[in-house]
Image (cartoon, rainbow, N blue to C red; front, side, top):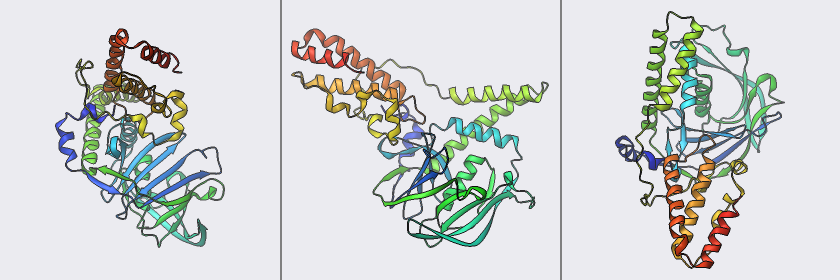
Length: 380
C-alpha cells in the first residue's frame, strides 16, 4: 500500500492537495559517472519548459530525489501517481543540521567563476569551459577544500540546469547561505579540475519526455523547515543540559536525543482494522519501481507476478491472491530507502488476506484448493 494511505487523514495533507500543481516535463536528461569505481552512479533530470527540474541522483544503487524550481531545491520522495512529498528525508535533514550547527551559520558563500578559452562538443552540442569555486564572501583568499570544479556549459540552451547545481551544492555541502553564480545554461560535463579528463560526470543522452509530477513545493519547503526547527530545538536543549560535560560527550548525547526525537515524534496510535476492507485506492508500490536494480533485492516471483496467478472457479480468489502476493512484494521493497511503502497498511492487507485464505480453505472446490496451495507452496 502507498504511504499516503497512512497519512491521508491528516488535515494538513488534505489541505495541501488543493495546492498541488501538475508539472509536465519536456526533456529527460541522463548523466553518467565515467572513469572510476563509481561508474554505477548516475544523475537523471526531467525538465519542464518553465525550468522546473525533477532530479534522480543514484549513488551506489541508492536513489535520491530532488525538485527544483524558482523557490529552491528540495529533497523529496516520489509517491503514488507521481506525487512528490517531503517525507523520508530524516537522515538527510539530520546530517545537514548537524554540520550547519557546527559551522558559522551566518557565513555567506559566493560562487567565483572564470570562463576559459577552451570548448568541447558533447552529444553534438558545443559547450564552453568554466572554472567554478565557492568561498566565504568575507574571506576572498579562502578556497573550499582547495579545489576547483571545471564545467562545460551550453549557454544557448533554454534549460538552466545551473539552478539544480546551486541547489545540490547547498544540500550536499550544507552551506547555509550560497549566493548564486549568475551562470546560466545546460551543464553537459562537470568534474574537479584536476580530474576533468579522467573522472567526470557527463551527459549521456537527451530525449523527449511525456512524464509529469504533482507537487506543492511551498508546502514541502514549509514542512521541512518545521522539522529542521524541531530537531534544532531538541539539539540545543540537550547541549544546554550537558554543558557541564566535555564537548564530545555533549555532542554524542545531543545526537542520540535529536535522532530519537526526529524518528519517533510522529507515532500514531495502532488501530486494529485489518479485518475490514480498506480503501479502494490500493495501488502497489511494486508497480512503481523507478530503479531496475532494486529487482535484485526482491523475490523472483515478484517480477510480473500477476501473470503467474492461477485461474480459479471461485471468481474472488484470484483477486485475493493477487493482492496478497503484491503486498508481500511491497514489504520486501520496504527494505530500501527511500521507498513509498506504507508498512502498517501493507501488514494489514497481508493479515486480512491470510485470514481470508484460512477461512475459505474448506469451502473451495478441490481443484481450486490444490491450485491455491501449490501456488503458495512454490513461491521462492
